[in-house]
Amino acid sequence: MRWSSFAVAGLLSLSTAAPLASAAQDYAVLIISRERLEVPTTCEIGLYIQDQLAGRLFQEESTSFNLPPGDVSLRLKLLPGQTPGCLPGLLAPPAQNITLKAGDIRKLRIAQGPDGMYLKAAELDY
Image 1 (cartoon, rainbow, N blue to C red):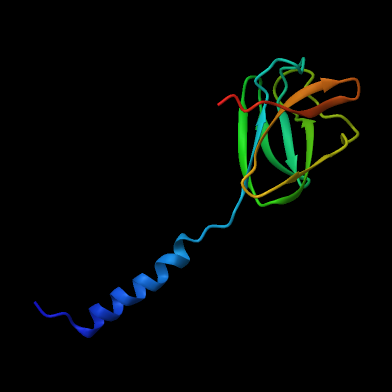
Image 2: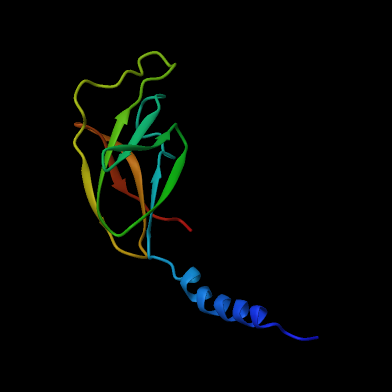
């Protein structure tokens, strides 16, 4: 069977494109957990990353994000919902800033303090 010049050219172009397709940017994994019952509310909690709503957490849930390395601003806020008393506050809670490095896997859990909700470092437990 004869190889045409088009088939040879096609195979050569695939071999040069393969390294470009497999080159991946390094990311960090951020896991946010509400697995513990530290926050005494059944309301949905919104997680804001860089002041954009990125996730919603109910009790005993967790979520994860692949984020580029660098400084990240995180904010928690009660979201309005169907449950009575789940109205957001008038003031936005202060943001927490963390720095992620490429390849990091960081787990934070939602906790309650005298000034409201905040994110606290947690063990990965893998």
